[in-house]
Image 1 (cartoon, protein in one colour):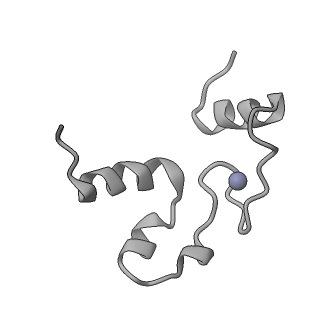
Image 2: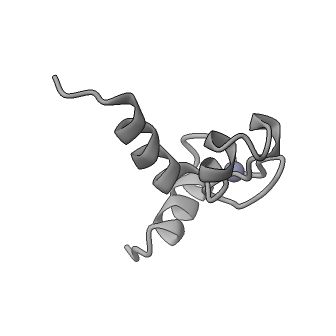
Length: 65
Ligand SMILES: [Zn+2]
């Protein structure tokens, strides 16, 4: 297992929120992070598991099905 917590957080930050870097740097609080999927603060994602939710993920990842 190679679970470097810093690398892990960097990977998560790249995928989860554009504000993760600022959070890790102590510039903002966790509650001030925008959602990586919808960009909302607070999060405005559709309920997990719904077709709207997966459509949002596909859009964020630049995929088309
Ligand atoms: Zn969201």
